Length: 239
Image (cartoon, rainbow, N blue to C red; front, side):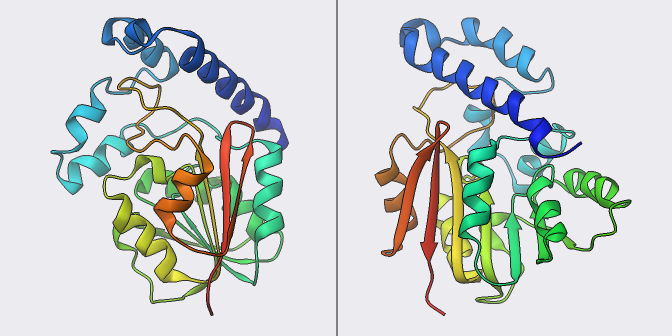
């Protein structure tokens, strides 16, 4: 299954989410009784109360919460956001942090980049190894928490982090690690999303506007565009 065949479900879920978030009164939209059946329809394995519990979880409990969701849905990317990523890549050595289903890492490897794919959920990495096994491509995989990446400073020309920062508990630590390991370029995509207690995902951070994301990352030379209800960010790092 190629990237393009996964785009329609992603675009559809974004449109449905936009309608729910913007056209229902919060007094209805953000009630547990209303949203629980929606969350369970999205993914029956999800914990409706994850946002409340996450702050007091141990690292192992937090990791297990994501392991329990494997296999995750195919992709959160659309063709336009994917095009943005590949337009912004600089250099040959690529790190994808929070690689999820691995489609971007696999595509990077197909295009000849030297790729390291990392994710907090080992189950995700096992699945992408299976997906890529018959495609005659090579890349490394590393189980890693974005808040403490096991790589030396400036290890990669470009670091890619797609639909991951909204999941982290310590946003400052996660961003610091992304900047630390990046030599030339940092590419980040997050959903453009209002805060709600109940969402069909495990999002802990919410970015409503480009300025919020840019301020959180704190690199002076950047661009940030809204594409398909997502904030698509690219920063030039100092060598």
